[in-house]
Length: 160
Image (cartoon, rainbow, N blue to C red):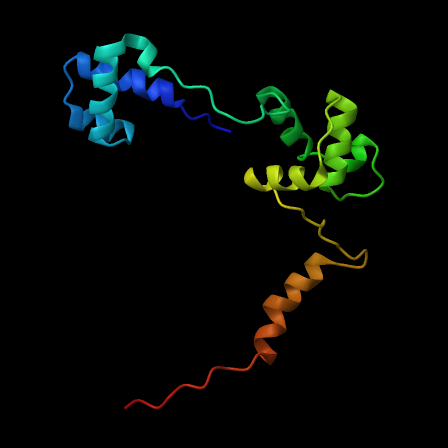
């Protein structure tokens, strides 16, 4: 999982590169921000110094899990739930919440956890069922040998 630079890092880099003589337009393009933002950050830096570039505190409840705990939780999902003592192969938000509680002592609502996982690209999945009688070699042979013989052919239109 690649980490993106924080807003503060981008602001500091933009100001530093501009002070080094780079054109504002080039700095903005390379950092993926607008020229107006670079000018605004530069102006704030000139009036208040480095303190003007620091990330402001965000309102709201702090996250229950630290970033390293989040990485551990997401790593669990690559393994089988049976490795953690569950009886079936299906990960559910309730199971993840219970595992977080056992491991970190943090209580999380399964509904919130479901949204949290969805925001990270993880959706509930059922394991693919494979019948015991399935013989993939026979299936492949049938698809390549028998199927073309019985498949309807596309009707070709007469040339105009």
